[in-house]
Image 1 (tube, one colour):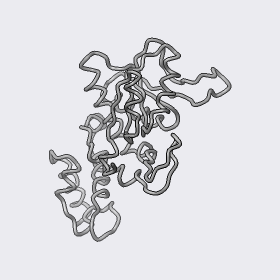
Image 2 (cartoon, one colour):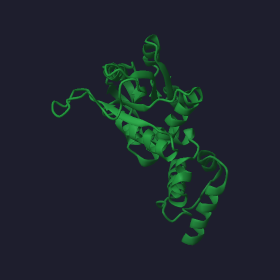
Image 3 (cartoon, helix red, strand yellow):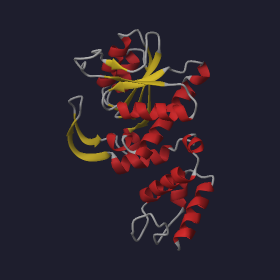
Image 4 (cartoon, helix red, strand yellow):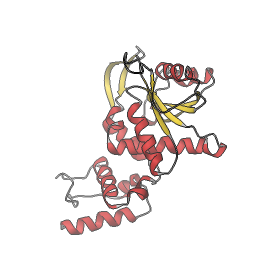
Length: 254
């Protein structure tokens, strides 16, 4: 297939009203028909998904593509491909584990960040906007929460949703304003804490303590992945709502 023909096919496929994951399940390629894909005998599902997403970014206007529906299955596929590792690990909580979720591999990836931002913003709008309680800001403990914060407020901007971001330092920087919390939040703001992976919840509880010291109201906590090791119970016992885009069960881990 010629490059021009391949480009036309790519554009045509993106017009089909199917999710990218459904489209990838349907298509079976025996040869590399897209010129920008690496040469291989059979097109792997994740490579096809990534290609189609980048084609979407190239062909569609910014406003339209940033308002696209959140593709949860594509994000799950990216986590499996890039973030989930097996072995012997020690977690931030001090617990030993036989698997590790390196979420920076997706929060610092352009497609991963876009999907995470869309997923968290969609939940915020569903959970809080209808009750006229949309938070003024999102943020969490540095450094894990920082790229997530950036992703959410960027997607919010493209959807014309007013939203601020902030970051919480583990230690004050020792100069300048010497603050633990950085960003345009103020007393009486309503915020949501965000996190990449929650195990026992200790990191986010530390962030909550810092922002509440400023007179800020914490509406809840949102994470990309819940390891199901007590985090939810820790938050809910203190009155904080908790939501995760995924749990480890979504990746076949019990």
